[in-house]
Image 1: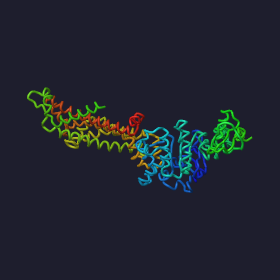
Image 2 (image 1 turned 135 degrees about the horizontal axis):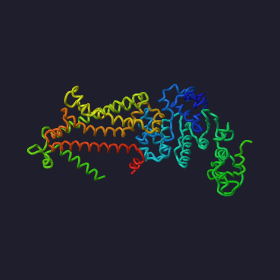
Image 3 (image 1 turned 180 degrees about the vertical axis):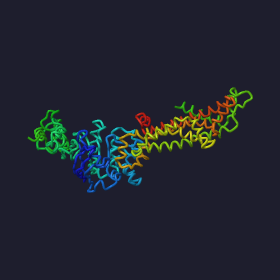
Length: 311
Length: 254
């Protein structure tokens, strides 16, 4: 569990981050979202003390980050950034093994960990281990960057706009990969993004920052349905709010008995994709299957009811 | 590519022959020698002169590299940045002082021989290496430096594992310039009795023997060209390994 306790950063008397408190549960993803200059990156960088807080405290599993030397602290916290920051003169394996090497792991343990991570990121170890970053595609470099951050099994992974440099298709895949890997490893992740869509897709919790303050911290559904201020409502994107809300729930939540025409959709499909499918195929209901077994149907009316905001 | 390798081998063989078996070239230099004068310089073996010339250059360049890179590391640390202008001034002075003046001034202090030449070559070698080391160390990719800090490398680990290896190709360019300047400047050392290939040239000038001048000049020139070329090859290899730019990446994929 990560506790951020009234943490502030002043630059020339002006607060870049103003008394932010937040608790992050173990094995969850928290997406910190805000416009540029909102203090979200400063907040993230105060957790591994790349920026020293002016006041306040961060506790990781109850232990204050001030009680350990900076470099020791950073080796326990994974750190992945937008332009990956790989060491160009190191092979993929050496890049990933950087922190375990600093921590004095044995060669065999490092090698096993590198291969394990490469496989987790669907990169064949024999093929990629000995290559240099310049020989990889942007998406592969980004994956190696995240693998390096995860190498020493850190208590916490900090990510600063990790997918910012990727094109939309690679980006969607990278987001899915991160979700899958986070669930597999049970990692605790704090991720900074300016993209509300990304925050809603990835976050178990979304923290919205504005002018150095934490304006709302809650589940994606809470943020969409009950934005705490006009600023949050703007960030959630006025007209797209119902669609964003629908993207959070799978079809399985609205299944009812009955029959519908046409191709069936999988129970894990989001309501948003199902709505889109209904509109495109001109249907009022879709059949739902799970593992090939028919569960029933979901109607447009049910989806519409789910998308309604509070009155 | 093959042609270049062939040309390089030919030059190396020519140089070796000129240094080890100078008498093979009597026919070529004879037309430039004065009547009844010697055609081939024989007062000292060209091989020992070459070795002494090269070791002077190697010693001076090594010392210059150590001092210049250390200075550059110090002034690129946050604590040392205040000394950047001062250290620039000092190394610039080394460069603006004419080598002959340095030799003349060093002789009373160090006596005749290799000493003053070493000092002149050392001072001359500082600036190119220092400038390049500063450029190399202050233009490192910001994302890589941020990541190095963020994953917990200490100052020393960042310097040794990331900064110096990444800056090395640029520093090497400075060393190359410095070595080539030193190879030429060392010839002047013979005016204060350092044993270098300059001896051959000066003997030729004093006795109006163009054959000697050509011999000495040709050997020094070939050394300079070949060493320059070897260092360029090394730089290209290193930059390719670092994948600096897309051309490097493409080349290593091919």
